[in-house]
Image 1 (cartoon, rainbow, N blue to C red):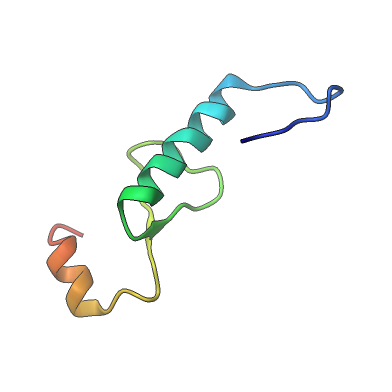
Image 2: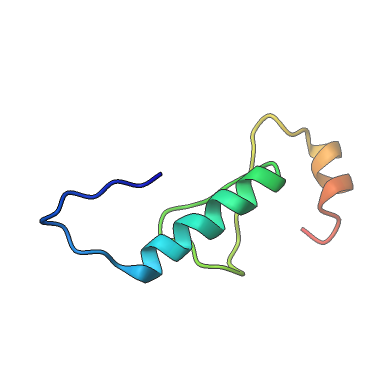
Length: 60
């Protein structure tokens, strides 16, 4: 749930970006960088070993 003060404008693109980010991080062991947009690079969790990362994400 996102809550904005009434005096703060709503930006649909930001809300859409947040939803995309939450869906991606729920399904995969990744973290989303600031101002991330769909199809851009993400960060793999530090808890994922190099071997596991190569197996899960063979293309990178």
